[in-house]
Every structure is written in structure tokens, then in C-alpha cells.
Image (cartoon, rainbow over all chains, first blue to last red; front, top):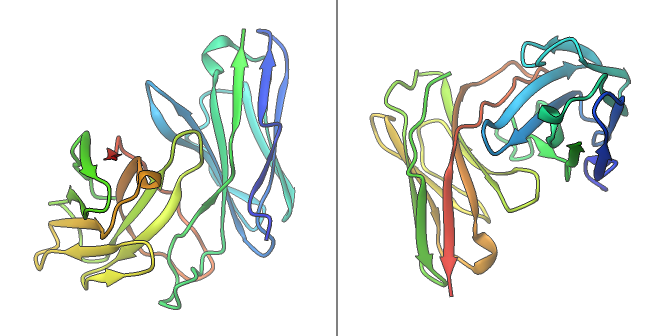
Length: 120
Length: 114
């Protein structure tokens, strides 16, 4: 299994530009999460999907951020227009909602390698 | 979800056991204790979880006190590659087929020294 795949791994852009981050979850997982990590605020959940449906987007900072999951194998996080304060590492994670220990449902999330975004 | 308290940082000698404490005094009866870790520049990685019984897997052991107000993650033989930020998270279980978000605190920076 290739694990959660994120692209690009690094993105440098100028303020005002549109940025699109991409995520391919682990095949068979039905939950997908977008997190953002900065030194000041740590690791924050932005939005998560169950079965391609957005369940909780209360962590999305403002209208400049949008996320979509058109199918079970792909999700995007878009920032338009981007600002310097959006600079962070963005992680995507997926979960089957079942777990792998054989002890019943639990929340083992598998994280991707992250996208390091720098907005100049 | 219950709040957790962890030390900011800890050191451990390579080859020795690393014991990472976590306080969760407001934990509810249906809340699990999860441990994740994040090695520098990587995404967080699940380690172990438990409800009230002690748990062990190939990575670590989890000791939960009888009153469930605190727990300790034990790495039995720490290596340099175990240097990471360790997060203790408490949250409710969920129904099969649906997932819920994890709330990460500041964690404990464990440094394994050669």
C-alpha cells in the first residue's frame, strides 16, 4: 500500500495567487481529514469528510479556503487568494473507521507526508 | 473531548525505557486514550490506544491508571529514531463506519540521547 499521497510536497507562491493541494487517501478508507500545522498554532483540523461528504468544516479559517472530495480516491484543498499567513504544512489523513487491531472501531488515522506551503 | 496535560519535553538515553506521562483528569467513561507521534518533518503516526486495560503492541505499551485520570506511554528500548513529539489524545469512541476528528495538543518532545 502506498499510503496517503499528497501533492505537491512543496509549494512556493506569491500572495494573491490560487493554491491547490491534492490528496489521495488509502484505498478503502471512508474518512478523510485536512490538517494544518504551524509553529504558533500546532496541528489544527481544517475539515473532514465521511464517505465523500463534508462533516465538519468549522476549522476552515475563512472563505478563502475550500475543500472538495469528488470521489473516494481524491480530495483537494484550495486557497484563493493566498496570503502569507497561510504559510504552513498541510497534512491529509485518512481512516477506515474500523481500525487494524481487531479490537473493533477506533480512530487510527494515517497521515500523508504533508505539503509545505510558503506564500511570499 | 477531555483535555490532556503532558510535559513539554523529556530526554531519554538510547536503549533505556522512555516513560511519557499524560494527565487526563476529566476523562469520561466512554473516552479512549490515544497516542500518536510525529517525527520531524513527517505526518503524525498512530502508536497505540486503550480504554481502561493496559495495552501493548509492537511499538509501545500503554499503562492506564485504575481511575483513568492518567496514563503512561512506554517505549521499552528507545532508539534515536524514536526522537519525536508524542501526543496524548482523549476522545470518545465512535460508531462503526464513521470517524471523528482528533484534537492534537502541544505534545511532549522526546529526545533520545546517544
